Image 1 (cartoon, one colour):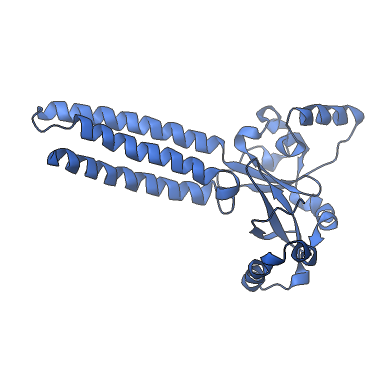
Image 2 (cartoon, rainbow, N blue to C red; image 1 turned 180 degrees about the horizontal axis):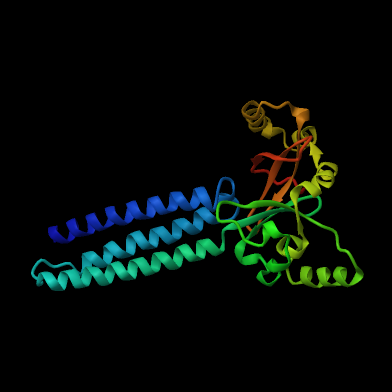
Length: 250
């Protein structure tokens, strides 16, 4: 029993280190804050790592027996390691597909779009710099207006099945082209404070960190499949400054 517990302890230690380093890299590269919360990345990654870290050591506890020949112990541990690694790779692949790759301005709001939501068959028709999905956090893009009646009907048909313009690369355009519309649709922070006075402390922290004044920022809703937050924007350039966990769509 003592030898089994020791083997399980070392397995937990090794698995924990691998899972911890991998999780840190994934959160830094694929799910930078606040997308780790907004896109379900943190909970999905926690589930994958928990299963991997718990299941492998438990199997080691069950099969480890010092009375077995050394070759048999090595064989059993190798099988467990392969199974554990396969499960981890599958989990990481799932997290990879769910990673946010685009934050798109869609008219009066921003939408977080994950890789699996993108219509891949349209990537070749996107502007050159958007034909490859990002591996280091989401890219900010604008979306253009429809250019013909046929395209309008096509956009409506896709939207009815849940594929909005932000998910369709043929509608993406450089963020800078949407800046005038973003600034026009965005609202002053005084409106946000009027609706959510409890956010004053959070806003004060953002202002202190960014070195900006209240009238130098504006806001719009930022939505994903899992949550609705608020994105704070520079009032002149529309560049993102910070985020608040507030539903400003109401």
